[in-house]
Image (cartoon, rainbow, N blue to C red; front, side, top):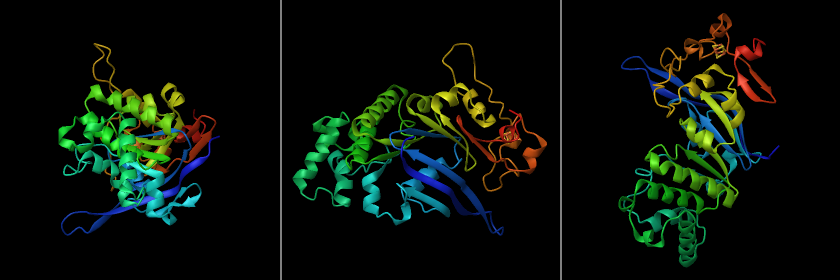
Length: 322
Ligand code: SF4
């Protein structure tokens, strides 16, 4: 088995939110006891509906948010004890929206070179410029864009700038948070192919956060499914798409639109809408939406079953029903 690069051990992240005028505050468990490993060389897809906690988890891995409890380890050492510079050298982000994540007042050359300047890498201006130009070339950005501003570029070109900005630090891990969801369909595949090429060329490891299962199936080697702050299923991509085990994973896969004419909009059988994370249902938090819920599901949270196929958190498996 590949070496573990990043590891989350029983990680929780709680936020205090206002419950309304005169009603005090409530606690929102955005990430609720997640244990997960990111292995060297893999692309781990993290999927789930909006609000399930996947972006919060990504921000903790980047050191942008502290954990409330539990621990994140980078090659076995606590992330909290890693210096900002070291973390930036090893873990870089690519965010969703290339329209808002790039400073409109800076040129492409300045944007791509900023991490080098901030962290004092390649202190010599000439060496910095050379490294920026090489990285731009690697991601398919013509040298003439060095002096261009983001508003002079297309969405796909802007996302290439975001990829270059991440790669210029020569990181080992990239946290890709919905890297193609703000792009036209026609350029999404170009960016995905670029990410794949870069992974091979630079020996990178990706955590790919996405609600788009087609994107995840295309690029991920392993998938973790998140629901209301917990990982409910983990498996290799092929196994998960061929034979999903958790009822929520099955519902997510059933919701994928097919280009087949005449098939209409698929029915996910999810029934009621996504619960309020401030007031999660008791027992298995998926039970109000689960077509296979049993009496025990309303009373007790399921324990995880880990086996050769991966890991699943559902009473159907822990109780031997399936
Ligand atoms: Fe459905 Fe019960 Fe499994 Fe939860 S534990 S997913 S409610 S069968």
